[in-house]
Image (cartoon, rainbow, N blue to C red; front, top):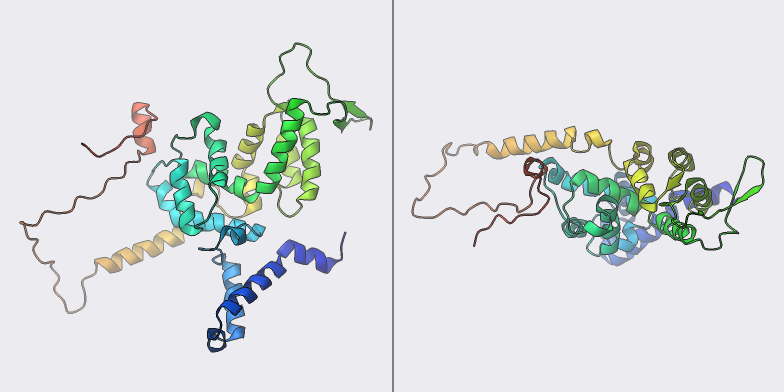
Length: 319
């Protein structure tokens, strides 16, 4: 283990932010002197603390640190919470378009992996609710390297790669060999204890970007066998995992933001007030000018889908 100073720098990624701040300062050129170097660094690190520093940045920076990742998840929630509040259901491609509004080069494979947690492999064109997608996206994005390694470990265990060398400790301290099923029809998934043992090694490798080992142990100890999809679902739905990341509120409060709703209500009230000294009645509408029809979203809402039992997307336009 390195000295406390080195451990602190690795955990907080201070050097990453210093390098980014200096790079941005140099890009300002002559304007840097007018702005003031001290004020620039003050404003930069204030934005880092508030989590707004990742907006409209390249993906390489957005995913560079755990704080950047949690800030991006929170920004996505704050910007597009109305999608969930309205009950709109979107496809993976449409959620990816929203992600690209905040990060233009956001890779599509991250979005697709998150969608697979919700929809599984054979239903990638189906619609998803905002809450289902964002919790799955949070886990996939925040723990991406850990989950990629976990998927490789799971594949090795599932295919029986080196079965005699994959061992787990027993209560007696002696290793236990992995025994293949004798009926010729292997059960679904892998041995949960064996999988957990491998994941604990990964936790040590990704110590600054992995699920808390205690939570993994608590979740995986409840079952004897586990699929990789089951692991992803467990992480996405676990309230303590959500708290550990610290980007989103509990699921019950996901679509509620009292302070933001209050500000929006104030803004709406101001827009409805007539200008001072002006006329309080709007000018009469010219009946000869046809009104512009309001565009109707083609996304069906959850209540509509539940009412008729359909899961297919419909188009509101008529030919």
